[in-house]
Amino acid sequence: MSERENNSLTFKLVYYGPAQSGKTTNLLRLHEELSPELKGEVMTMETKDDRTLFFDLLPLGFRAPSGLLIKFRIFTVPGQVAHDGTRKAVLSRADGIVFVADSDRSQETNNGESFQSLAENCHRVGLDFEHMPLVVQFNKCDLPSAVPAAEIRERWSAAPWPLVLPWP
Ligand SMILES: Nc1nc2c(ncn2[C@@H]2O[C@H](COP(=O)(O)OP(=O)(O)O)[C@@H](O)[C@H]2O)c(=O)[nH]1
Ligand SMILES: [Mg+2]
Image 1 (tube, rainbow, N blue to C red):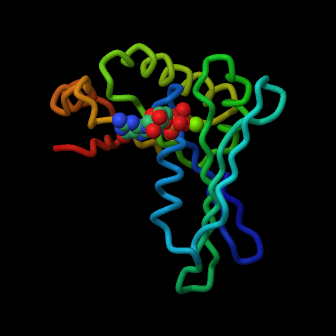
Image 2 (image 1 turned 180 degrees about the horizontal axis):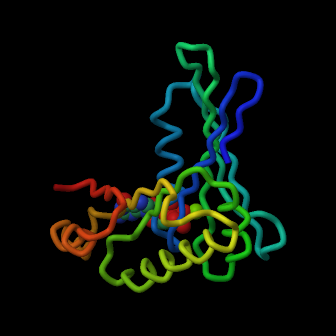
């Protein structure tokens, strides 16, 4: 949940998706693009087992003209199937989600399974998936084996979520 205290508002955003789809790359790129006064350090945590939280975090914030401090805490989840417990912990109390799909045609099953796990995990941690602010980003569109944009648009045409395709 976003919290409002001390004249500040904090939003938690989560990058979710299959392993290797480019979630961490997105976070690092965002960090590069932001001006220094807006951002904190990127924190990356990796463990071999699932006992410690395993995620990336980018904190950022700015002051609105009203004086309100608006902060974002942007997380990525680990995509590997084994890390479902961690994904639930990271997803808990999210205010918004970016689902990062891998456009490579060989990854269609992994994308589908990960999206299904997102819906299930939202329900498990008490988030209303149907009303969650969610954007679907098809990444790795530069690969020769990427599914063409027209095909992705056609397939997602009935879905209610905004689709981000970085190519025409
Ligand atoms: N070709 C291509 N490779 C990408 C793109 N985004 C990420 N990658 C590569 O995909 C691999 C996995 O990326 P990473 O961000 O670690 O994925 P994560 O597991 O979702 O966090 C890395 O080798 C990245 O350099 C992209 O848009 N195009
Ligand atoms: Mg990662």
